[in-house]
Length: 195
Image (cartoon, rainbow, N blue to C red):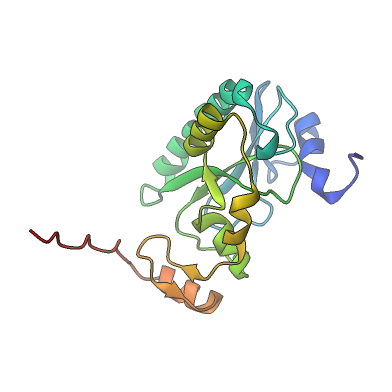
């Protein structure tokens, strides 16, 4: 494959983070490059890219990559700590798209407010609020138990009906998503047990 396509932009950043402007790169060291998502889907949305190994995406991961995932998690937790010190009201998740649109493994660290002008289509919502967004610990568990990650069963979630990730309210369109997330909602109450 060539490194010149738009889908290889992350690989170019990983190779030479020092050439990138500060509005692109949040942090880098010998292990990772952490960048701001170019089209953030929430108030805080960063990508953590490994530098020590070249892996195209989750489907290439094996149990041998578990230490790599632990390294990404270590850096993600540091970023979340800093961002929560700046704004304690934000909560975060870290995970991978089951079928990423860009090459080079990247861990999303995203606040759960989803307050962003870049959140424009149902697919944007679903890729972060359904099982299509595979949390890091879940990915590690899949690799431990199955040895590989199979993205095929996750495709359906990209185009499923939108629902609130907190209270499961059905959401008809992005306008309704934006209205709904601007007001507090609560997880559904557990059903009372029949005894």
